[in-house]
Image (tube, rainbow, N blue to C red; front, side, top):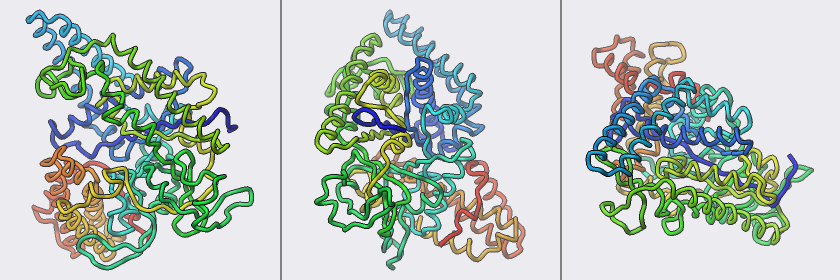
Length: 565
């Protein structure tokens, strides 16, 4: 692919929800899944489809975590989502009648608008045969977008105890993406953008012995991944390892990154090969561009805070619909003004022009200073677009419209940008994440150490059973150990410590972690008793049925995923 213009823009969206099917409804549970589908995933599909119909490229790079794919394909979602949308329509009609009775006619019109909105979503879902993953896969296979994989359940890679458990997260994730989408994605999203290099490591709890572990890049490269995204500070501290040219890999000194100004070392506008063994890289890292990302994320200058946009937090009743606008940054919920959709188009157009101008300026400046073509990577949580920021999907469309004939900035998927601008240098990176402080404090701190102690003991128990039980020759033992593996994967989700630490859903996070831990222990006990030739007790039968009832994901789980060093 020949390079043109000043450079590329890669908008990368990370779509993820922990496993919530059969685990509560509202405010924490399956309601989250239906809300995300209605407010983010269907609107994103609509935007790309509309752009394609209008001859506009909208090359999003969209991560759909394996556990999210499993939920979007689950019977509970496929059957329940249309009913949920119908309930939203009913709620809108009730709101409309209430507002008419109070002679609040603008609010009544907004309620009618909501009713039409949810009806249109329901019809779209039916047209897609209730299969959102297939809808996105079809767009990807046609070259309109790119899809990413990830760990199976968003397991936090740097803190997983045993390499074989980290490897299982990767293998389960890649295999699930391939099974659901029909192809194996080339790129992956590191959960929480959390990276760990290879090297010696001492577990923070339970075990005090230093041990060697593989780097994240090795675990993903072994399963066919070619790139991932990291936060900018991991490039800022990177060490040079080598350069890539027509003759292949050439080793360089660690200090070349400090004096060589010709190759774009440490620039977030350049892809970097990643290696922690001093040799050639097996995949590339793309870094988030802070200045571009803050145009959306920043509380001070972020577009979603525009007074004209729909207010997220104020709703009409519990889990109700929204009728008010942001109004202002310091305006209390009770003082919010009514939403006027007609005001939104001008805001979106202005902000899309500003966003593309920022990207263009950065790329032009980089080319003028370095003589090199840059790649702006703008990663965001997918749910920012549509869920938190109702107008977000339309903003993306406006951006792609702005860039349709731009001679300087070419929107590309991550793979397209890498084909245009492959990594020509290899670095070693330190550990880090995109969480607060750029490290792991959100997921590991004194308040959360008990979770990792419990998780590490679960890892130890599973690895011990994997090695000692006759699961290769006894199908009954294998069945129980597979359910234990499923619960271990779910236990490792980064979401549970995150919602506890951030106070977003403290009780739910505690409950979910402890429930998966209890189910894990119970089915491990069943596997052990079966290995002894004992018949299942009544409690054992209930334990097995309980896992199948609540956690019907990864039905094709393969215990060979835990094989390896």
